[in-house]
Amino acid sequence: MTKNNGQSLIEVLAALAIVALVILGIVKATTVSVKNANYSQGQTKAVSLAQEKITDVIVLKNAGPQSFFASPPTPTQELVEGGEYCIKTVVSSDGQTATIEVYVYWGENGVGSDCSGKQYFHNYHVETNVTN
Image 1 (cartoon, rainbow, N blue to C red):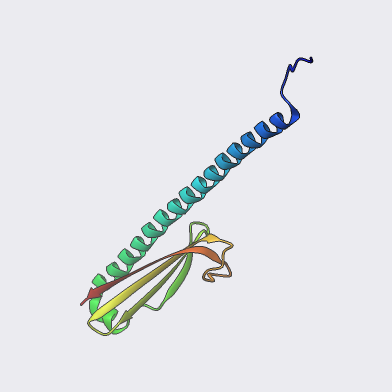
Image 2 (cartoon, rainbow, N blue to C red):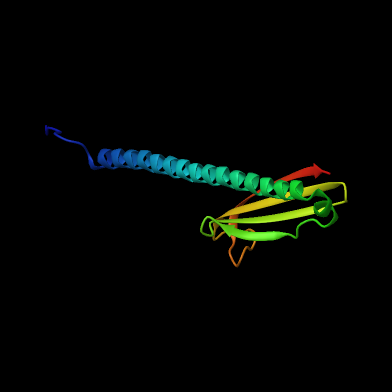
């Protein structure tokens, strides 16, 4: 009778397959986690940029309310943060109330809005109303 002193080839291959699946799961979880963290960071920055833009428009309104409501600022589009973010601002007024809309796009090389020839994956939109 022969003595079995080791693992069979099938046992070794099964163990390697299990280890590979565990490593693959860890890599996938890490990738998803990093992607979500980057998106959250981008969204936080987009919200901050939108708030700054709304504040700028409100300061403009407070400086000259009559002219602001009679002739609201023209729509603007600008690249910020080295072109990483695109901000579009639209102000409309009926004479008594003005609607301020701010769109922030980020995540270059996506399929979203064109801003100076760039396409973006993500966007954030905020709208607020101000009165005379």
